[in-house]
Image 1: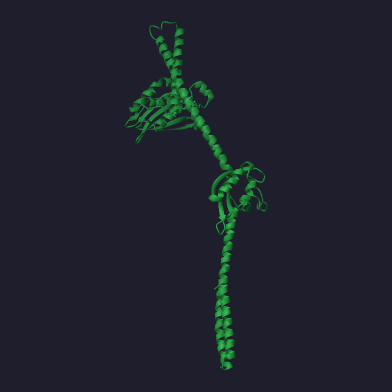
Image 2: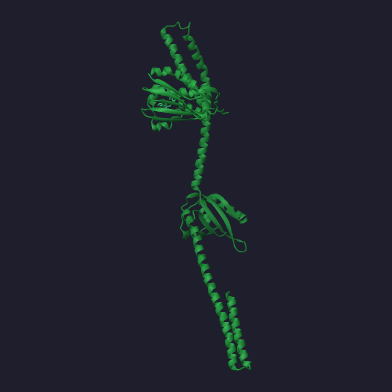
Length: 441
Ligand code: ADP
């Protein structure tokens, strides 16, 4: 029941009373009978009024509850509005700020009191105001703008990058009456994007530089190899009969030319291999080979080197089936690198080489009792040109490319290499390779 219904009801009661009064005037009934009828009528009317009153009371109660729920809800939205992580503003269609949440005030560095009534364009740098205005004109037609990125200003005139989304608020007739603004400070994101872009550019430049370096190295090594072969070939010839008639001093000179040329050639080969590996241009010549035989002959080849240092090299072959598919020259190269390092960096004790098999993989272990590698150095041991101890390096020579080549070759074979070491106790290099290596091209 609403208020007008209630008034209607009161009116009806009044009318009844009037009817009764008239009735009493013209009635031939006894006054007591009239009184009785009237009382009866009034009682019914009163009863109806009471029911109506009760109904109204209930409705009042309901209304109060609804108002309370609305207040709670309004408060909740206000809190959401105020504590939202992004700045929210409400402006009229001239862009005058009517409402602003806390984030907005802290973003623009201005208090609630002063932000209201200000034109939002005041917070846009002068050189962007024209664009700002034309966006607002556009907004009249499209009603909504999403993630529009512009520069904005705080009250202290510091610029920041902002992403803005705007929606139009309309009145009942559907005419625009203002705008809701969501403004997000994206300065940090922009900076991160710029940094990322700078890193990307740098990366591209680096990649290009690496490619050029590899190309240069490959060409250079190739060019160097040809004359080196001539030096090697002719000095070997000179040492042979019947040219070896020259005095002992000259012979020792030729021998030094030969050994230096050999070292130089190994170095050139290493550089060539490394540049090929880096450029992804090294191809494996896959064939079936006997790993046990390969390990034994390689160790024999390096026997001389170990003997010079009074070291024993023990070989343990623990495989039932030594047949594998791989590139024999490259497997040998890996082993020579690890073994010569083990011998180079061990003065007392021994070097052990072990071959094992684990299901469809084979394992090669080279263990020495040498100087060892510190924990800090272990992390970078497979990095190219990395030599750990400059004094030792000068003593032992080497390029710092050996382990980098080993690492890359093993990757190419889809295997893995790990190293364990302790200073003054020795090092253990473990290689795992698939029994069957597949072509990488
Ligand atoms: P290099 O040609 O200089 O030997 P490598 O890449 O083969 O280059 O080795 C890099 C460095 O790792 C060596 O200079 C040495 O300091 C260290 N190193 C490698 N193998 C061993 C080992 N078995 N024991 C101790 N140090 C080692």
